[in-house]
Image 1 (cartoon, rainbow, N blue to C red):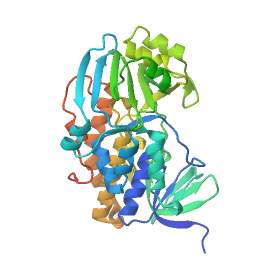
Image 2: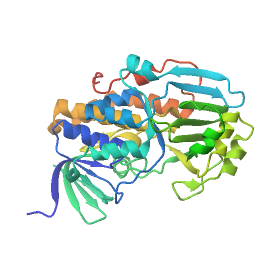
Image 3: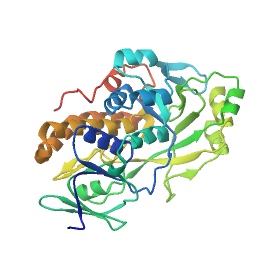
Image 4: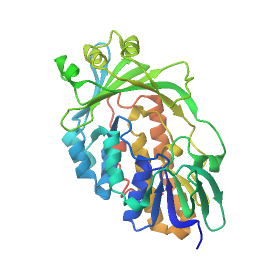
Length: 380
């Protein structure tokens, strides 16, 4: 009896992309275990957008109806001048999205979405408090070592472990992500103070304060009881060691002072706000090697300005699952090659537009993003 546990597929990271990969692979009949470094699940993050392109994936997992009941359903994506309030674009969502793109568009608290994904996984397949410390590629498997002393032998390893991915480092060598020159302020606002403004806050708006910065605000619950904003602000640098730091209403006023009354109302309703750096990497030269394969932020991190970062990770998970179904795990090299060929151009395009911060600022047709169906789209 060996002390090394032997499994078929190991997913490293139980975030939104990793949890989706595990659920899809399990539903397809594969033997999968997920390893997450966090000691327990917690409701982290704040608001997140889930477009119709990814709601189709949650339909396949069995979570679409549940998420639709929890999340808010914006009628439009608005872009507005941050000073005058003039509309720069109004992109129709709501019932239009269901009809034209094949699924709803929702905004939801990331923690609520993640909780539903975690609950959908069998408890015995999900392993918290497993921080990966070493990877040894062998002829017939990959030996994974964890900080808690456990060792696992996996036939295939999927790295869904984020921008600082250890799997990525194994493939391409150590390289720190590059600071993008942008930070985002994130806050859940005081709803009593927001209602006291007497202003009607649309459920999905991107206010442009000037060309180089913005504030996006939207509801994260279907009943409108929770409202969130995130900014995109250029700065000279990021010198903090922490992944985020506390900000303040005063800092928000210094950045957005003199803006439209609706922007000012958001700032006035701010009680706690944090500031996060946005990190970048260039498009990668490879997404897999041998028995190791990457998805999501591990291979194409992006600024959040297009609200598609998590969606791209979940799309990756769906396409990778389809490729493994098509080839079987024994022909994993072919599966990984098809996966990368199918995903590279789309993920790179979204990464590029998101980093440029131009998405839906002016009228355009977003169907190439929202109408895409990862469950049925052609494999390259």
